Amino acid sequence: LYLIFLQRLASIDTMLMLWLLATVCLLPFPDRFPHIELLVLVPYSTFFIAGGLFYRAMRDGFTRSRVALLAVCWVCAMVTIHRQFVTDPRSAGNAELVWLYMLAGTLCFAAIATLSVHPDWMGKYAKGMAFLGALTYPLYLVHQKIGYVSINALAPRIGRWWALGITIVAVLVLAWLLHRLIEVPFNGRFRRWLEPRLRRADRILPPRQPERAP
Image 1 (spheres, rainbow, N blue to C red):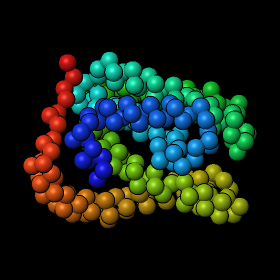
Image 2: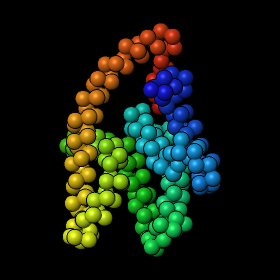
Image 3: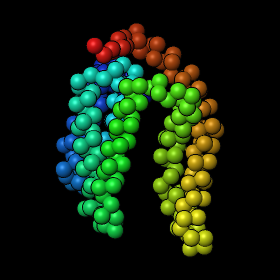
Image 4: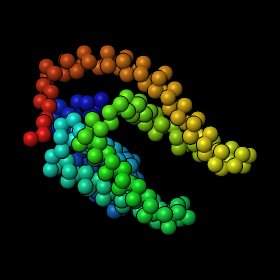
């Protein structure tokens, strides 16, 4: 709700830029300001910001500022990946694979940038990709904790690869159930609750005009 009303004062691009600036300021000091890092969502914020910028670019076109912000997002993402697999003692066993993970991250940025420029390339797969996209947030919510519990419980009995496969299927099904049974019905009710309040807010503070790329 806060962001919905805040965008009446500042553009989405401005809010993403400020969010990225906060991330850049905090990234060199891991665990120094834990409460602020939690608020800003460091180190994951880079990927959320990049996603927002790619969506804006796909809808309204790339601008110099969006390209520059995405370049900073990519640098921050590489720093985050390197830190995760080199300096974090919990991932020390995978340190030799860090360049592979960084390459995978770079290819993801390049692929999404390409689809942002040419969304029509998705063609007949657009609906399927939209469906998979709808599962990303519920999957984000459930994959880690439930995944760890499931893999740790199953691996000693059936082996780690079977445990991994079963866990992937299970969390995907759970994400779909959350989407269908909670997100879809709740979104409709929330929209019906929110829209009259936004109309009242329009009389006090008119919404910003949509921005278009030059």
